[in-house]
Image (cartoon, rainbow, N blue to C red; front, side, top):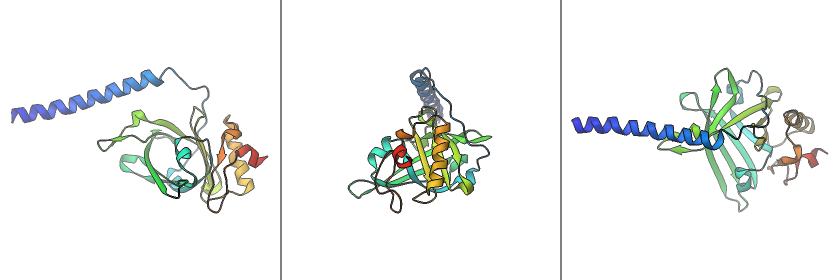
Length: 207
């Protein structure tokens, strides 16, 4: 019994030490980079109203966009211990479907528009130290559209409750992007069934 008790004590201690070392490594790798600009989170965001399915209208191309050809959408839902489940779906160029999952949690309860999001799941645990900040910058009337980004300006998406946005709503979303200092030409529209039929720079679409 003594040996078993000692084993149970040592393993959690080593696990906690491993987690601390990972956090320290992340701080050393990313702490000095800083951010040139800070984008502004949406005021008075209601996460319950934000939950549900959103279609990607345009995005700054990153890993997900490089793997997806069309019909990209994301679903947000309440998850364990106050977290937010994020499930992305899309169609690849060969016609097959792809799905990814992440978890987010508000950095501060009083600012629900700023989440720490991670895609790293090890041993059944979502590892937030590996994540990045995800900022909901703006939402349209009745939560019909949303703009999300991060402080690096290398990530950004325009989302809609439907596969397409009318011209006026798209310009409103684009204006929210510009106010935060983004370059509209960095965004590429996402082909959607019932929406845009091919990818083009957002600045060209709105020209």
